[in-house]
Image (cartoon, rainbow, N blue to C red; front, side, top):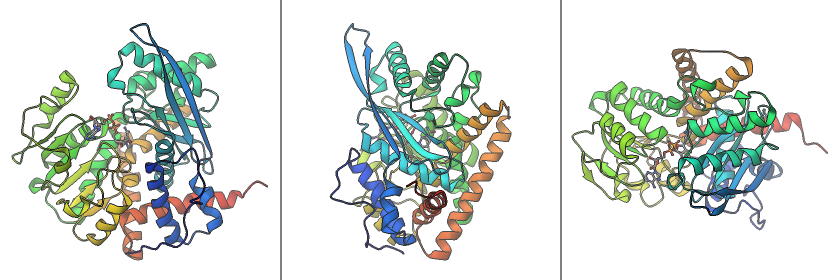
Length: 434
Ligand code: NAD
């Protein structure tokens, strides 16, 4: 398995606004690829650091009469292939460095799927579950208002991510449109269908995860009816993935979790009941269909398919050796650290990794369809959208598997290398403006 440590991706003595553990992780992953691809040292910093980053302060009147000032970010990684595209995350620990890491991953993801975008990411350092609807709307609108000079349908297109949803995208679209004086649907993706959203966008990421899991099961000659799955995270990605695994693929889901509870039941969990519970209660805290397990223990329980669909850095050098799954399907962004990759590289014939930039690409692929539909005023049915989605995922999956086999590298190295090569090539062909 290829691993080398020769040139760093960036000057380590350089301190930047991106200094942060998640950004370091994204840099380390890039360095492995840059070594493997023999990328010239002169091109490394250029490919790593974002093209542009904006930090904004969002003063908001709270329901209790106080005024709070929240921090918002937007990072645009590169514009070599087209406008930038990326989700908006509302999470209390969000930092500029984490936003930059997510933007970088988005670049490799878009390039792997051959979408005409550079990566972007943004968000607000806030816990959306602690805000009333009025406060959430105020934060969302203020964030978009502050971003108006930096985004646009041909410069940077936002979408949903952790802590945001269709309603927040609708507020973004409305705020931008009111400012422009006409309806600009194509400024955001992941909108409600009622205002130009695409049928199937909400489900696209989770459905994509399961399409790829089915491909892997097929390759490994695993019978879905005899397989079990554990899904971490029960939000947009995790809930759709768990539902599709249970009711479309016929896999027995034995574990689900969210930020409040991890539940395991070797006899199988009624995922539809969990979804209904979620709609009523908003979290899994009181869902009583199984045993409570420690979050740390949850990921190492026996299963055939493990799908981390929540936060980054949950599979580490410490627990990677204890994973008991046959397929690791990375629905979340950055769930596996480079230390864990070293362990998983050794276990390549035990754990089949579907790396994040491939596994969760369904969201941005259908976002691309939504953007095109907005620009062209097209309308496609849900089955047309899903069919096109699966075709792109199939192509990407086949390319990654072939590259990994031919070059004897991990699936992550293969996937990232394909994305990085395309971005570097576009940058080189366009040239460096003097
Ligand atoms: P979401 O906000 O809808 O759901 C997140 C879920 O994770 C919630 O159930 C939350 O309770 C749970 N969670 C949070 N912290 C946790 C923890 N420490 N342990 C267990 N569960 C925890 O977010 P989402 O849109 O489903 O995104 C989840 C992941 O997928 C993120 O990494 C995101 O970047 C990635 N992703 C999302 C999309 C998309 O289209 N929404 C696309 C690509 C990648």
